[in-house]
Amino acid sequence: MKEAILDAAESRARRGGYNGFSFRDLAKDVGIKSASVHYHFPTKEQLAEALAHRYVDRMAVYLGDPTKLQPRAAVKHLADIFIKANEADDQMCLCGVFAAESGNLPQRVLPEVVVFFDLISKWLNTALRPAESAPKAAEIIAAFEGAMLMSRVMRDPAILRSVVSATLKRING
Amino acid sequence: MKEAILDAAESRARRGGYNGFSFRDLAKDVGIKSASVHYHFPTKEQLAEALAHRYVDRMAVYLGDPTKLQPRAAVKHLADIFIKANEADDQMCLCGVFAAESGNLPQRVLPEVVVFFDLISKWLNTALRPAESAPKAAEIIAAFEGAMLMSRVMRDPAILRSVVSATLKRING
DNA sequence: GTCTATAATTTGATAGAC
DNA sequence: GTCTATCAAATTATAGAC
Image (cartoon, rainbow over the protein chains, first blue to last red):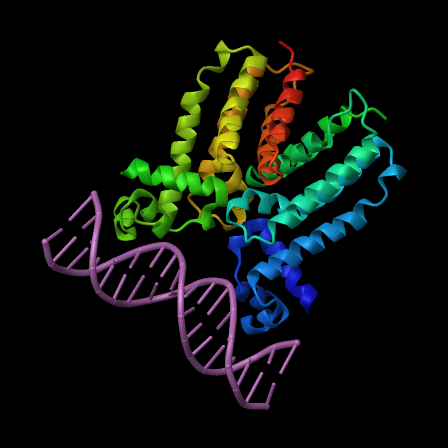
């Protein structure tokens, strides 16, 4: 049930942000009452913290060992998970949404978001084996985050795909 | 006073999103009561609509005639306004934030956000005089939006500057 | 235009029964 | 673990005086 609540929260947060869902929304989604949601997550801040933490963990598992991928394959691997969520469910990256709302996010959530971007940045920089000509990891991640934003609001999946494709062309190997 | 309310709303929205501020917040910011804010903007939806609309208008004026700028100068011109807001006040692009929250935005606001991205896209594509090798406008805008997101949350203005710099290097002329 | 006062609803959260 | 019941606070919004 704890996982089901997080699933519902993630789905809603990735569409409408942290302030875009309530305990009652989640309760309805999973078929219990809001008081029962509080049993699993006493406060909304704790829920969001757990949400971001799980997101980071899942991403770390998905990414895997960066030394086992060629640069282009690594960028493609990262892009694929974003494309999938974007096209299947109109979802942004959870931490991208939280970053957009960062000025109004509870204290304990923000550090998790920072950890997320640190994780991907280091993973990508390892995979890219930083060369003179290679784009920096942050540039690639920024392009993907912005592209998810735009693809969804413009209702045009081609934007994200186009950004991914253009990024891949810039990678050697 | 109407403008002062919009100023306060924009400042708050660009930091914490649409659901991140209340009429009482704005009232305190401008030194009146929340009931008086409702006199100027009957509903929050109308306020947000006016906010996005003003943002689009201001951007159109700022951008000016795209045929009078060389491609690189145009991209730099667009980037400058984002860099300024990002570094001076930790602000995202208003429409970038709204796009991130799009799943929870009132109906009449979303179209304004779409208009914003259409406006910049067309302006940029005109300025770039689309060549075989030129990046598409959407790719550049996406990179900037994502970079603002990351710069702020990572507390590192260098990210946005680095993305802008890398983007400029890809432009001919 | 701004105020006081207040309505109506939503929200995060708690107490206690089962 | 989940429920009913409820609370306190916040939020959007309105009515009517000045």
